[in-house]
Structure formats: C-alpha cells, structure tokens
Length: 65
Image: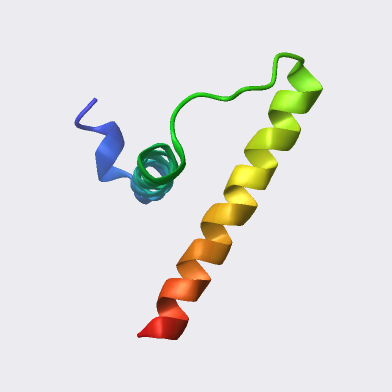
C-alpha cells in the first residue's frame, strides 16, 4: 500500500476523496443526514436540491465577507 501512494496518480485520486468526504460532511452538518423521499428517483432529486442549496449557501457566505 505504501508503494502505491508514491505514484502521483494515486495521490491525486486520494486528494479527490478527501474533498468529497469534506463536502459530504458539510452537507450532513448543515442540512441534515436523512432524506425524506422514498422512491429512488425522488431521493436523487432531493439530493440534487440539497447540493444546490449548499452551493447557494456557500456563495452567500462569500458575498457577506
């Protein structure tokens, strides 16, 4: 495993994983962890709306500063 992380390609993929884990944590903290929809297509739509809301919240924070 240590040999794999010496390659630059693996380091870049791991960096993307860290970023996605951070975003998932922010979404859960700010908007809650549970989805209300039951059907898969509705759950997908609800998650997309949460991501959109999250992005708007980040933009509003930047404008305030």
